[in-house]
Length: 186
Image (cartoon, rainbow, N blue to C red; front, side, top):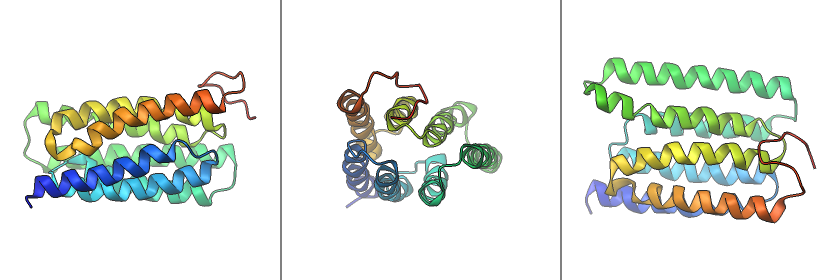
């Protein structure tokens, strides 16, 4: 198998776990499943030269553990969120400075960082549907990035399409009259 094929298989595994995670009702379980998905994506991006996506998925695994173990405390959650945003920016700046890429490639690698901002902000939400709504913006950024990578990120491409569908389905399943970007708890 080529590196691209290995990356594709691993990204498909990540896709299956991540898509399923949005159907879970409890936030901690959803995050645990997404951690497993991030681990698969991390290794898949290593094999498919995913650039900044490798670094971001390491941070996602750490992020998910922080939020799984954190008690529901909005101030602490926002502090963690801001610190993670800083980590994303530092990672991106280091990546841009230390990799000899064309400006267009450096800009393409900014897409997952933008998605990471949305995804991390989503995790600060105690309402699972609000979390899903913000994660949809994360998925759109990653979908665009994965399309740019191509076949090695096939699982990521299909996964983000399925994630968006799964998010929509779960929002409909678990709705109780609130908007998806509201913070009202059920």
